[in-house]
Length: 193
Image (tube, rainbow, N blue to C red; front, side, top):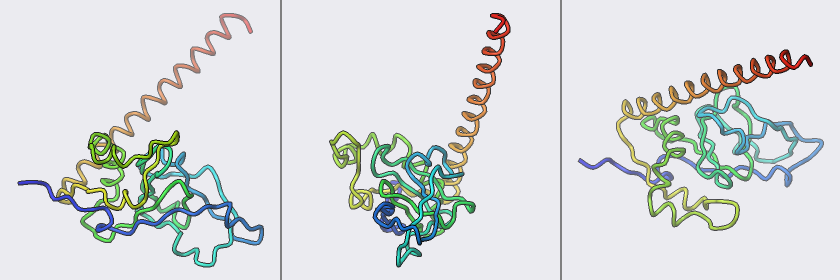
C-alpha cells in the first residue's frame, strides 16, 4: 500500500514572513523576530533579534504555538516549531510560517521531514530550487510540495527519533566544548601564563 502524499497547502495555511524594515516605526510595538538563524533546533527556543514595527493587520503575522517556521532563502527548508514562549513573535521575509489545519499532522514531524534529506533527493525538488547564489524556493513551489502522511503514531515516532538525535548531538557538543576549555586551561598552566 502506497503512503498517502498531500500537497502542503492542503494541510494548512502558509504565510510569508514580513519585511521588518518596511514596517519599522519608532512608535510601533516591539516583537521578537524569527529569522533563519533561529531555526537551528527542531524547536525555536529564542530569537536573536527584535524589531519595532507598526503593521495595521499584525494579527495575521503573529506566530502561534506549533506553527512551523520554514526557511525559503539561504538554508532552504530548514524548519522549526514555534514554542509557547515564542508565541506572538513574527517571522522575517526569508521565512514562511505554516499553520496546520488538521490534528493529523504533527508539526514536529513536518519540521523533521522538511529538514531531512528526503526532499533534497527528489528530482522534483531540485528542479524547484533557485539557481542564484543564495539558495531559495518560491512560496508557490513550497505550497505544492507533496508531504508523505503516515498515521499520527508513526509521525510521532519519527519526530521523537529525530528529537532524540538532536538532544544527543547537544550533549556531545557540550562535552567537546568542556574538553576544549580544560585543554586550554592545561595549556595556560603548562606555559605559566
